[in-house]
Image (cartoon, rainbow, N blue to C red):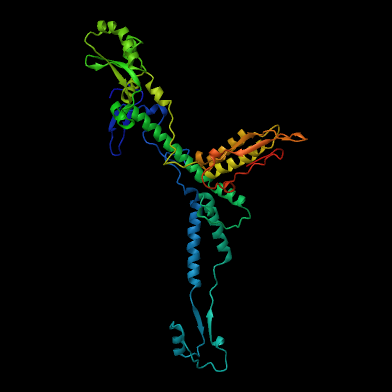
Length: 421
């Protein structure tokens, strides 16, 4: 291959002195500085190609734990031996009965007259595992958990009894810091892969393959189609002939009207051409945009984000907590601050809370202001004015709605005037 291109795709293989292939890139991924594959590195090494293993920071603690656990097991094995001390005057049959291992054994001692049985037979106790070894082992386990992020709360338990639900919530959220960081890296990795898939699809798929996925029934408009020498002219070539036909039209009549104005020129410049008006489908758009000069730049301006099904969802607990804070700080104050009750702001705060709990719109309850009619009291004139609030009956769901379980604070209604909730 002649060295005429600045960027080429070279394929190497171990055991071969020459590259297996030197060819052009099938898609210009080199413009983004990316390869065809998309690696997922949780711990990238600053000076090496391969990433750092997730357990490598904790290998020192792991080796110490293995060594100490082996030593403690050997110590426990030796300490579990049963060593019995027997006076030489004890008969051999008695010794055999003691060491036979039966659950119940009646032994008649001979040769031990006048002495206690503990003076004749005694069990020798081996020293147990020292407490400093146990403390060292526990500290190593804690260091290993801190380096790897495998905290006890991830297993649904905790060694410290918390006194408040708030403390448990904060501890649970902090324990998920590494998990959330890795989840964000997976999302970024999937977004990068999706971007490469889109760029490869632009250069490797034709219009019919795209139309088979997105569908070919939708008509986006109409355009003039000119076939010259057996090859259809691109939109760019039609625009060079005349800007009136090198574009899309909303209706077939507009396309026909533009074709009539340019028909004499087409008959003179391309007398043997076949001229038709075709509908603009997904296949036509895909082919036309692929011939533009800035096609590569247009494709690279798009970004892609994978959200549903394969990536993590937003933190639902955080959304609920934020919605409750908005309700307390904004919703409640909107009903208490002068000069008047702001029902609209309160209902917007309710919407934030409803969205956090994923409550459907037909089941949502809102406040609607009701103007108070003046009441004439004989001898006293018109009664004092006030703001009435009542629930919109059209929005009341069927069945009870327990707002206290959702964390929705009930509004503190003004005391002046009649109120109904």
